[in-house]
Length: 321
Image (tube, rainbow, N blue to C red; front, top):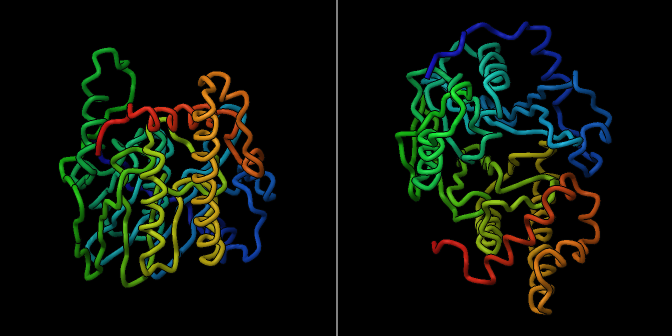
């Protein structure tokens, strides 16, 4: 790992990012498409202060022809900064690090890998070399396998393998602030961690919550994912922060989390219907109908993967928990 340069984002750019993002729209267009919401590429990164010292960070990424946001969260304390999820490349994670440096002189001391997928980890080598990296054992194994892959290109960015493991729960006390790292169950990756700030009632859910993005299930545990969302909904939370899609007002985010839970159920039920009818997977992908979800971001690229993953679950082909 190398330490990222500690140069700050120009103050004018930082203030512009904060100004365009906060307060969140109270009645936004319910979509993950930034252009449908009236944003341009120059409006990102989008930074919001969710509670004193607690910030969301949204940066655009591409998936084919579509653009949507990847969301990180960072917590500024008198004892250092904790970052929940990096971004998808060294360049974009460096931009996140520089944005943090424009807000505080405190160093980044803790990084939590909530999702082990590359769009949240590929730039982790840009965090300070002495930061402590946390992950669920499942995610640590995934990242270790990636690092050990003999055909990994030599030009690929270094893989940071976390050494601090969180199997169920870990409570940190950083600069007088209580921060809980929790595993609420297998969801999008199988090693999904969330970051809970109990005093502020904020829960960063990473890729377990995709705000108006079609359920992405290439490594998911569909039914367990629904149960994990329900566990999060049962907590005393004011602000649920997604891993993709927009960070809206607390009220909208809570509504959209329930919308997302129902979307997960809808996808599972449609795949189950086709499976019960004996429709083979290829035909099921063509025949599946998702109603309102047809207009969600990434429907074209993720629907087939979701059907396939539900079929695997129904066939008993997923690894046991």
